[in-house]
Amino acid sequence: QKEVEQDPGPLSVPEGAIVSLNCTYSNSAFQYFMWYRQYSRKGPELLMYTYSSGNKEDGRFTAQVDKSSKYISLFIRDSQPSDSATYLCAMSWYNFNKFYFGSGTKLNVKP
Amino acid sequence: EAQVTQNPRYLITVTGKKLTVTCSQNMNHEYMSWYRQDPGLGLRQIYYSMNVEVTDKGDVPEGYKVSRKEKRNFPLILESPSPNQTSLYFCASSLDGYSGNTIYFGEGSWLTVV
Image 1 (cartoon, chains in turn yellow, orange):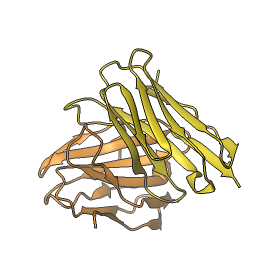
Image 2: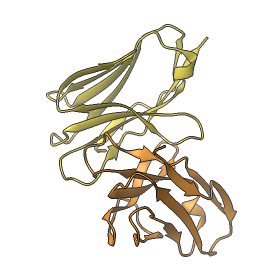
Image 3: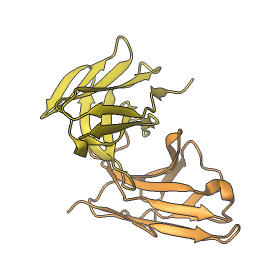
Image 4: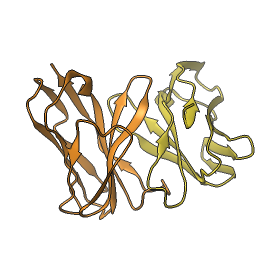
């Protein structure tokens, strides 16, 4: 079983839709949870970062962590064609010196 | 501007011909790492370094070497490349190896081994 599972998609939505991206994980020790956005032929860039449980909001993006279910989500409101990219989740724990990445979900927002 | 710079960005090489992919960061980060990205497999860590002269294996270290002689540089060496090392490679740096909110990735190096 992989440490982090992520549906690869692709996920295709119309412009303006609410998008929900998810990852599940198996290791209850994870404390730090990240979402990265990767445009085609580019390096991943940090989008959202959460420590422990709860929600975090930044503009149109909301990251949610449910440690009891070992489940994290990224919500994108009012999705735009410029949001079309691959979204990777990642997680770690204190002093672990390693990040576990999901395989990424490809999102296409149609104008 | 915070930056991780990798070179070359694109390379086609032949089996067995040694090559080095350079990585340099300008943020004085202690932690640096190399990943390879393959379709359906996500980012897999090859090697990482906690600081100068401190390196350790990641999940897929076979066929690769690294060195960390200076804090800013972390080259990836393929001593005898094979076709199964054809991949997209990313170098990353961060303040530490766990908190994740300071990770910067390079633009990637597309490597093809024929």
